[in-house]
Length: 120
Image 1 (cartoon, helix red, strand yellow):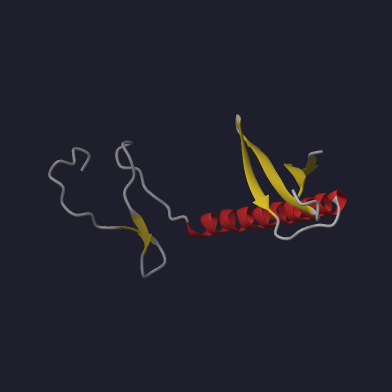
Image 2: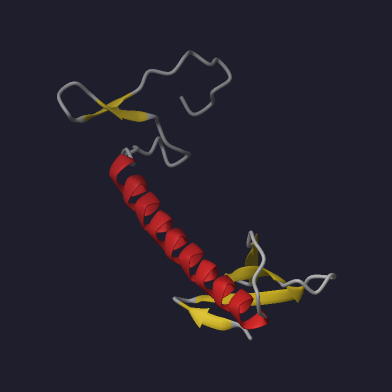
């Protein structure tokens, strides 16, 4: 009964309580990342009167978690782009540490002397 929602799979599950007084629910949200599938399981609090109401609640929670994750990923990608500092290549073997100087231009950050640094 999995449903595809915004590129992620939502798999709601309902379980009847042993004493027959209602249903509990959980939802797994899965996402394909390269050749792997990452799932996250969320248990819903409370007892639901019917299996259908437990499934509906699990689908709603799954959609909300997908929406939160997408918003979070978008925010993090913007933050990463806005806070990335430039770096300069040092003879093709790596990068120097670079920061923004008082004048707003990139400036090299001093490194402590390292006599074993063959790329210096």
